[in-house]
Length: 105
Image (cartoon, rainbow, N blue to C red; front, top):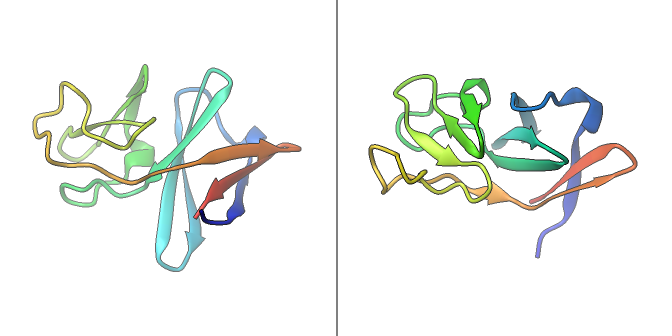
């Protein structure tokens, strides 16, 4: 089990829109708010590194803006309709404390 680190404020997120955050020099994440839950996955698409935080979000699926690879933001796995089921990105545990979004690394 890793440690939880603060990556953003809850007020920084908009429903259904991604937010890129840099956790450390080697790790960037895309945060998403759907309803009252916040999800975190790796920022860069496993296909060719597209910015997932800039992708469109529908339900729990983000579509990479570069080549339309789709991921489930809850798990990081390829979405059921993805054109390649082999791709996935890491998903991270998230908690919110006093308006601070914390992600387990």
